[in-house]
Length: 438
Image 1 (cartoon, rainbow, N blue to C red):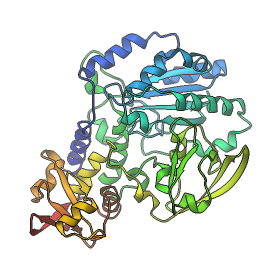
Image 2 (image 1 turned 60 degrees about the horizontal axis):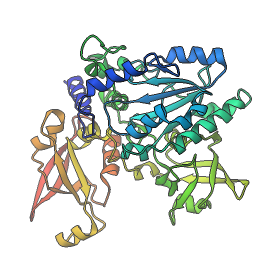
Image 3 (image 1 turned 90 degrees about the horizontal axis):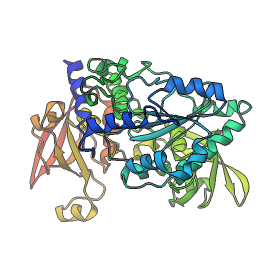
């Protein structure tokens, strides 16, 4: 029963609210027809790309694109068509991957919630860096490639220094995974094969990148274990530590939040990261990778360019820093809502809304924005939760928390099958319910 629930959960994740093209099947087949014999792009052939990179001595650029998603369509089109990128791309062996079925997960570890990502390698498999842009993810019409170009330039500089700089790249390499490829996860193996079904419904045979993250979380949940915190808050933004980075640079500080860990460390606007935790950087995604692999508390050494000179600082990671991550817009959060909330989506009430209801600014108050209707997403509905309920208590938790923070707390400290006492306000009535954990 537990396996069936988790499989249904993953299947529903594919239908999470995310804009897709009208003809998804046509988009996949059209990409194949257009690029399968392209002179630059090795289409859907990672192994061939690595072999060619070894033979030519060029670095390897692997672009991973979820074609049915409209997100990142702008930058994807620019990477394929922009004439100004040609001189840069010619210095790489270029591979385009449109499905995640057979990815070697020991090598391809990146932000699975993005619909356009790139990883830069040496031909021997050593990872140079990662690229991915939430700016482009949120705006499908954004075609700017400034940050992508700078990532390629930075990777070429790393390649020029290789293998003398191999030790500095050790932190960029992927770690062990429960299975070598996505289709070996039990929740995916039941439906997907390593190759796409070009003779049938190809879209239905495609593992999307976000399903990989879903499979990792389901793997831990199926073993009755807490979901590791790095899988609840994957590839976190450095904004959780008070830094806003310029979207058109490798890692240049655009703003520093007052009182934040970044401000306390002495980081200033205009500083440009050279390295973080001793890793050279090629993009903002590389910064998120460092944080993804960082401890729940501790410190990170950083080197900046400031006024043309390198400056060393230490950035402290306060206990619980990941829980400040906002995961509300991630497609991978929808199956976590089924696990933690029984299929509900909730939004923290503003101070103004609280005032009209006589609620304190420091107490929990999340309005139920959506209650699922089907499968594991209907569990909360079956327990009596309704749209527009205001959640004010879960177990002993009463303090003000974001939806993202509560998801983390529940998945870290509660297991499938538990029912946690909860209290909601329904109009003027106080209603006691049970919040199901799946």
